Amino acid sequence: MKSKWSITTRLTLLFAIVSSGVLLAFSGIVISAIEKHFVEQDTDALHGKMVLVESAVARVRAPQELQALGQLLHDAFVGHDDLVMLALAPDGTTLHASAGIDFPLDQIRRIASAGRVDTFDWQAGKQAYRGLVKTIRSSIPPAAGSSSIVVAIAIDIDHHATFMARFGKTLSALAAAAALTCGLLGWLIAHRSLAPLRQMKEQASAVTANRLDTRLPEASIPVELAGLAETLNQMLERLEDAFKRLSDFSSDLAHELRTPITNLTTQTQVALSIPRDAQSYRETLGSNAEEFEHLSRMISDMLFLAKADHGLMLPSSTSIGIEQEVVELFDFYDALAEERQVTLSVDGDGQITGDRLMFRRAISNLLSNALRHTPMKGRISVHIQSAGSQTSVTVENTGQAIAAEDLPYLFDRFYRADKARTHTSSEGTGLGLAITKAIVTAHRGRVEVTSDSSGTRFTLIFPR
Ligand SMILES: Nc1ncnc2c1ncn2[C@@H]1O[C@H](COP(=O)(O)OP(=O)(O)OP(=O)(O)O)[C@@H](O)[C@H]1O
Ligand SMILES: [Mg+2]
Image (cartoon, rainbow, N blue to C red; front, top):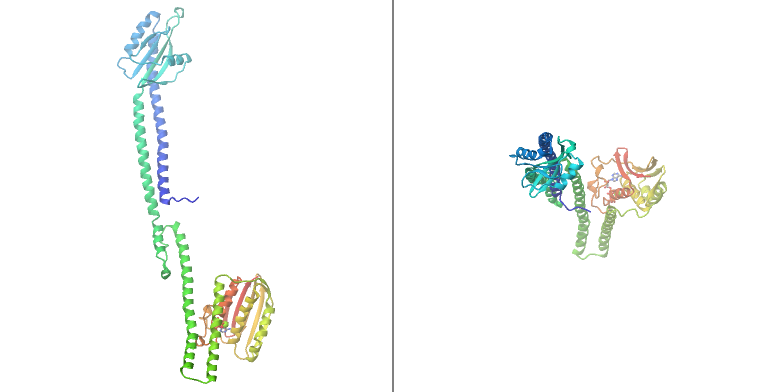
């Protein structure tokens, strides 16, 4: 599914989550290290006290001295408000217990009998304690009964808890502040980094049909976006080119249509201006018919080209024997060639796959051009060649060379190299070569032309 979150939102959230996550993990490590340190500190202090108690207990040699030991321990702990102590006589009675403290007797006895040496924590009312329990052997002889005294010393750890709570609060505030700061930073970076994109958007929205020459700046934007700008610019260039050709084409078209229609109007108006005899009306109508034919040919050519532009070409695809087609076209042009004493010849052979009628039309356009431009007693030869992956057909005719500056434009619509001869109904429409090129392109081929004093050669190259 496509996410609708903006890049800025995503980066902002990512920055915030990652930074607070890192800080929280770090806080966890620090808190556990501090807690461990507190435990070690407490353990050390408790063991130190325990050593003192042990030496006092060791001096007890008879059960009667136990009472004095209780007093001694009481005196030893006076002034140590954070330390509390419980001492149990061998018979289980309490020798000494710090005043007002509720010792967990069961737990202490259990630890004593298990002989555990590590500390344990307990809660007495609102106070929290960490304690150490030890069973200490006195110097009372075994004959006088049990001699072990259970001693529990505990330390008030409330200040640790208070410190940790404060520390935890500070860290949480820090994590929140870091999340906020990093989120803000993320937003700022994303916002600033995306500025060129907004700029591109603004520039792109200014592109209209009349302003297709607008280009996005490629130099001033980050490399990540330069590729996009370049692609968009290339697209604009193609659009501009296509648009220019289209508008050129429509203005050419209007221009081309205007001349024959003006001719028709003038001739008709002149004929109608005064009463005339039947013969002159016939002449006017005959001349009009010629113009109409020219117009209708131009319109059907244009329709053909429009179809070619929409890729509606190649209605059928068969194998075409090129030489056979050329020979049949020669039959059609024979009379005209004979009249102008032009010799027609064909050599080589080859096959292509495509639409026969369209292929004929392409070659026919070349032959009719050649016939029109070959001087009396000239020669038109067609060479067919199959080499490698290509089959080519060259139509060559003797005659004046086409000017080098005209060559690149010959295949454009309405282009005529000989400007003086345009707009006469007997001449062509200037669409013949454009149609030939469209047909060859539809067959995935290409066209080439060369011209020099020895003659003019149009070559159609088809893939096999
Ligand atoms: N074999 C050739 N020798 C010299 N010039 C040529 C030759 N073939 C084409 N041309 C030039 O190229 C121009 C364009 O040819 P194209 O076939 O497109 O138009 P056309 O022959 O004038 O009209 P249409 O073919 O539509 O009747 C011609 O007007 C002519 O000036
Ligand atoms: Mg022509």
